[in-house]
Length: 164
Image (tube, rainbow, N blue to C red; front, side, top):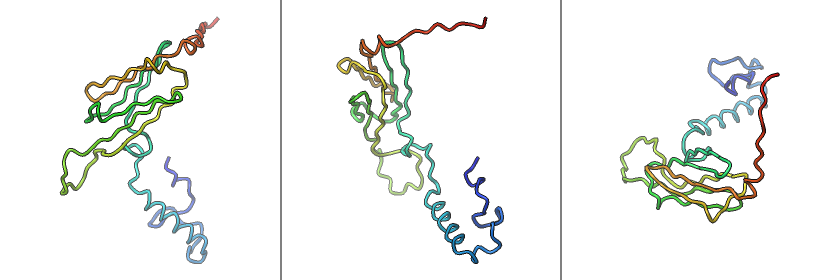
């Protein structure tokens, strides 16, 4: 559901009629209408699903076993020298920069992402920082984070019973 569907007044055009017959007669409604129009224009074209828009590029996949956490990040078009991996206070940070391969000033449209990126992933468990390994193959960065002995000891297996 779109947020606009919840608003009982229109934003111009032939949408839902206004609560007031004449918005010009009520200066507060006119101001309200103008502020909404400004926000609509400012956020027009903003798509948080695109890389670089708050969601955190690169896309990652995280899996966990009793002994380790495995983080895979898609970083197509980059080399291992373009990516930096840091571990501090049980937070894994993946950062780097993707540079444009060409200086094409005539380019009219591009959906490709260029620029600096940083992704922070809270691990939620202690890892053995001296045994962390990272590998890079075919545009996929894989970080293996072995859990500490204390973190492994905290794992408790719970038996699942069926219906009686």
